[in-house]
Amino acid sequence: MHIIGSKSSTTNEFLEAVKPKIAVIGVGENNLFNHPAEITLENLEKRKSSIYRTDKNGEITIKLNTKGKIWLNKMIN
Image (cartoon, rainbow, N blue to C red; front, side, top):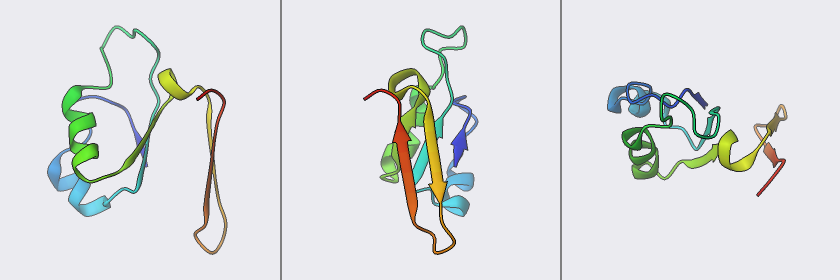
């Protein structure tokens, strides 16, 4: 699941429907919008979603095979 990072991007209703195990937030470091919003991170953490952010982890690549196996690579740790 790709999250924009705004406070309205992860409503409880949306997260209940999607049930994300992994959330990727594409966001620039020190961006003008202060994304991701704290409520966004809190909502994802409550659901124990693994959170990856481009401002913290660099470029993120996700591969998925036909059996549902997921590989995630980060450029920086």
